[in-house]
Amino acid sequence: MAFWDVTRDAYCLESGTYTFIIGGSSQDVRLETKLVIEGDTVPLRDLTKMTQAINYDDYEGVYLDECKEEGYGVRLSGGSGWLRFDDVDFRAGIGGFEARCSSPKSGGRIELRLDAADGPLLGTCHIPETGGLQVWETFACKTDVVQATCSVYLCLNGDIGLSSFRFTVN
Image 1 (tube, helix red, strand yellow):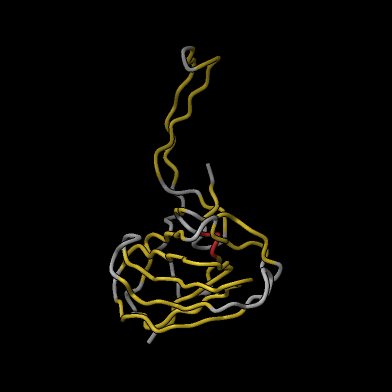
Image 2 (cartoon, rainbow, N blue to C red):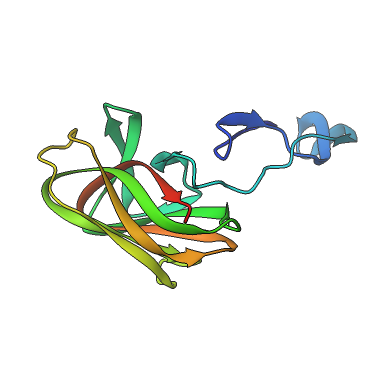
């Protein structure tokens, strides 16, 4: 019943009513009971803390890849893709973005968007060639000021890998 909570890097069991069913099969139910569990409430995400790219809520056009400095990162499977992070708490405000990226050949960019892969553009972080798949550097850019709870899309384009990132507060 527990699951890995990527917002806190820990196992979590959410509060709720759980139904337990025992039997030989779904057609042969012999015992059923409900259990109310007072567990955790998953908090809003704080993306002002360094966040592993692999801790996304949804994705398109990326795959998990080795990152020798941090374990795993994401890399594009084609020319573009995105990562979605839900329930992000920007209520304190943001104004910048930092990312650990690699680009073996031609570089690329990360577009930062609100609530959809084609949503409002917060900023663009340009990633030049770093010289290798495992040559990781930190890149930064300014973003529009945002004070909200939202979903954030990191839209990757070009020849880049992403291991971790964070938004910075004004």
